[in-house]
Image (tube, rainbow, N blue to C red; front, side, top):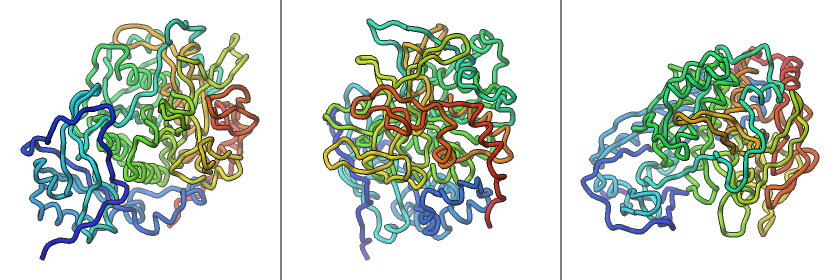
Length: 524
C-alpha cells in the first residue's frame, strides 16, 4: 500500500532572492540530514519553564532523558522510514531528539518529496530547495523538523569595525570593561565552561597567546570541536569570520580566565547551526554551562521549523541549567532588512535566550561617565524590537513591552534583555590574524555576559541557567540606559527595545545572588 504523506508545518522555503537558479542538484551527491523529533507533550506544556526555573531547579541528564528526550518508539519510527527510503542511519540520539540520516540527493529528494536545485550568488554556490517538505503521515506527530536539504547561508556574524570616515573614539580591553561593569573580583570562572558557537573562520593559538600575554593573563584552555564537518579554519583576514571567532574567545577568556573555552565549529546552515547548539548542550565531555552565540539574522530569514527547533533546544538548555547568551544584531530596529519594517533578530528573539544589545560607553578612569544606545548612522546600531513569532514570556509580562512599530502593533517577546558596550568607536581592543585592532558589535556583548555568568556561577551553589526571570524580577541590579534610539524604538526608564534592562552591574548581581533564596534540589 502506498504511503500517505503530509506537509511538515513551517518547512516552506522560498527561492533565495540574492542567488540565481543554476539548475538541478547532482542526484549522485551524498548528503546528511538531521531529523528532529518533538519533545514529549508534558515537556511542551512547561511554558517557558519559568515557574520551576525561577527557583533554579534543574533536571539531571537522566531525568532530562525521561522528561524531555525522544521516545524509543518515535526514534524507531523515524529510523524505519529512513531505511525504507534507502537511507542509512548515521546517528540516533534520544536526548538531542534527533536522527541523522544519509543518502544521495536523489534518495533524499524522493524521501521528502522535494526538488533539489543548485543556486549561485554573492554567497557562492549552494544546494537548496523551494517549497515545503513532505513526511509520512504517521510521522506527523513525531517529527518537528528536517534540516540539511538546504545549504543556503543562514546567519551573519554580529561584529563590526569602525566605518570610514569614522574613527575610534576610545577603546577598552575586556579587562577594563570588566572593571567598569564591576565584575565580581573574587571569581574568574574557575570550574566553568563557556561554549562558543561559530559558523566559519577560526583562530590561531599564536594570536591568543600574544593577546592574553599582553593583558598579563594566563591564557584559558581553548578547545575546538567540529560539528557536521566544521573545523577551526582561519582565513587570515581580519574582516572574515576570523574576527568573530577571535573576538568571542578573547572577550570571554579575558573576563573569565579561569573558565575553559570550548569552540564549536559548524557550517553556516540551519542544520549546522542547530547541530552545533545541541552538541554543546548535550556535551558530556566538556559540560559547558554557558553558551555564547554571536550569529543571527532577521526572523523573516528563517523557516518556522528552524525557529521552533532552536527555541526547543534553548528550553532544553534551561532545563539543564545552561545559560544561552545571544547577540541582538547590529542593524538597528530594521535588523538590516530593507523593507521599511522593524525586525527582531533570531536566535536572540527566542524566549529561552538572553538577548544582548549594545551601547556606546565612555569612561574616566574606573568610572562610567556616559552610556547610551549604540546608534551610529552608517556604522551600525543595536538590534532590538518585538518578535513577530514568539509571544511575551511570563517573566517579561510586567516589563511594559510596547506594541510592535509595524502595522497591526503586535504584542510579542521584546528584545534585547540586557546590553553592554558594542559601539566600534568605543570598542574592544583585540588581536586577529596577527594584527591588533578594535572591534565592536553586539557580538562582543554576548561573550561579555557569558563571562559574567560564568563568574557568578562560580560563586553560586547552582548555575544561573535561564537568568531572565531573575533579572526581570530585579531590574535595579542592572545599569538602566535611558538615552538614545535604535530607529523605531527609543530608550526610556526601565526596559526598552534598545538596551533591555540595561548593562551589567556585577557587584549588584553578585549581591542579588547572595541574597536570593537557596536553590531547591531538582524536582522528581
